[in-house]
Length: 218
Ligand code: G3P
Image (cartoon, rainbow, N blue to C red; front, side):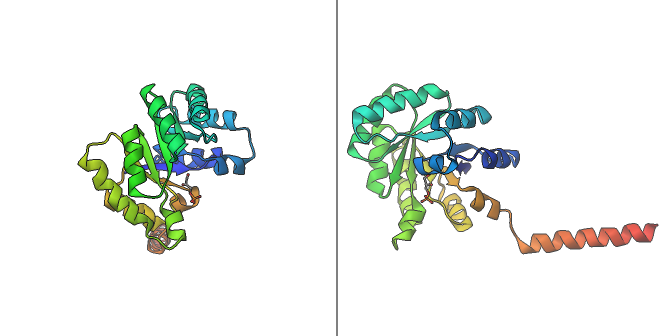
């Protein structure tokens, strides 16, 4: 499974890239706004930092014409830009047009299997089911991934599933067990994947024993 980082924070991207586990980046208007910097230079900087990885940048228009215009512009910013388009009818009209032009689209705000199926049929390179936000309203977010994986496989769609709105390490592991292509994970959750008290205890003991041994050796 590929790991994307779900952030527009350059320092976080740099740090995770140094761990050697980042396969791409997803942003959204909320994440870009959180950084308080201009949109275009932020996306260009991320694209330059990871030039061979897909970097999602989201449109904010809600009419097909506006989405198509924005998608064409975003795609000019860097060769590795993936345009994020929301799952709305106007979005699907636009997706279908820009996908035929060779623009890679990540269809976002996927909350049902039907939405994922439609977006894949319209030509999305990626679909983003939002698991955490489904959990928020008392649904089982991972159930949507459980439905989408066989649907994409049954028809050999050339569409990758990005498990999004990931909130916990358990979401990441379940995504991997279900065979999702990608999980896009916030920095704090990626960081938590490294934690284990037995690891900390084991390392502390190794170092303590090594110190004792060194002291005994003189
Ligand atoms: O990038 C979209 C998605 O991952 C947002 O997550 O935590 O705001 O629901 P969240």
